[in-house]
Image (cartoon, rainbow, N blue to C red):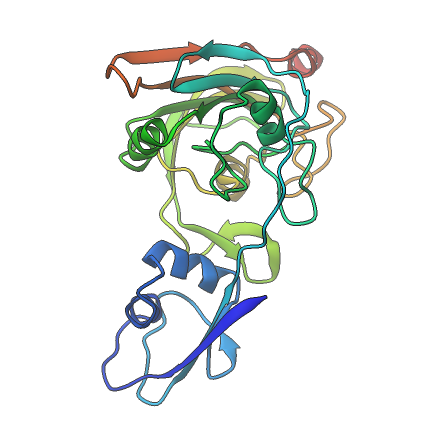
Length: 297
């Protein structure tokens, strides 16, 4: 089910995303941009870009999908809890575990496991209760999950202000040079393959810092720090530079070195919501990625 709205632009209306946000005050600008990326905003019957400059008499149609209720059930899925207090959990997520449910897939996710671990966690109709940030299904490593609304607001604010430290160990194809650098390029939906992300002019700003940890023959082991948190950011940025992540069949190629993408969230730092104390957590490479490093050493 969805809601549909249609508007006719007047003279000098400006950018498409700003116009739609003004016409639909119930939507944030970022929500509008996501709708545009997903092809749910059209101009004269065609999907367009956020930065499209509207012309007088342009017909704008907006489709807003309505959230579908999902009955979430706790599941006894083992969790590797690195830290826990009354406000939050820090979890070392294994590869292969999806973070949150989606319509048609309400089971066997990290959220189901968290609900079993924290029976009092408030859902409030959300399919992502307590989720502050995501990791791809096949990415392992550290995540923080809020137990209450106050903690969620605090952690989300730290994410938004870019004060939360998120570092990853990443193995890429090739010899990346220079040994330190910054990749800055906007990321949005790939216009030719909507399930993929890509570097697109109309995308959201994305910034990735990297530092070489070690060179191998034909490969480079990196420490990567995310300054933004876009979908598939590391994988898209590395592929765009010509040094795709090992094992990433979507943006690179399948590999005999690793059965899954070599991306591990190894370090996570933030301020505790209750006290403001700065804390930092680390997680070693899991066994499968250790074996992959051994194969290239």
